[in-house]
View 1 (cartoon, one colour):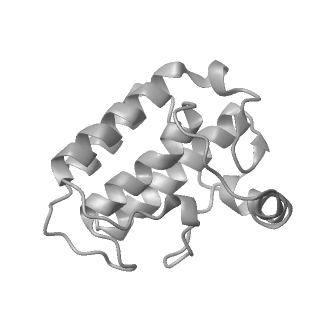
View 2 (cartoon, one colour; view 1 turned 60 degrees about the horizontal axis):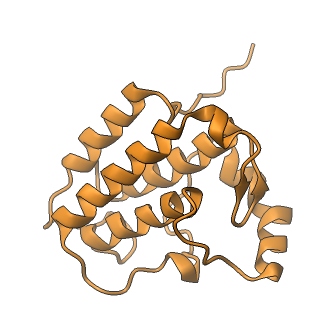
Length: 156
C-alpha cells in the first residue's frame, strides 16, 4: 500500500477554493517566515509560472539550465514532497519591484482559475518551459507545490 501523501489536484474546484481562501488570508503587513520577498512580490512571483503555463510569457532559462533542471531537479520538482524553505529563485522568477497587494492577489487568483479551468486534459503532455512535456498530474503537482510553498512562507 502506498502511504505517500497525495497533493491536492489543482484541477478540482475545491482545491482552487482552498487556495483562494489561503491567498485571501494574506495581509500586506505579513512578513515571511523565510526569504526576502514581500507579500506583493510573492503574489507576483507566483503568477509567473501560471502565465508561462498559459502561454502568456515565454521567458525561461538558458538551454544549459534547462538541461541541468531536467537532469537533476525534475523529479524533486514534480513529486509529492513539499519544497524546503530558502530554495534559490530562478532569475526569470525574481520580482524586485514593489507591487500593490490587492492587484497582485486578484491577478494570481484569476490566473489560478484560468489554469485550473483549462482542465487536466488540456495539460496532458503539454510542454513546460523548463522541464519539457509533463503529464497533467505533474503539472498539478508543480503548480500546487510552488504556490503552497509560498503560502506557507507567509504562514497561510
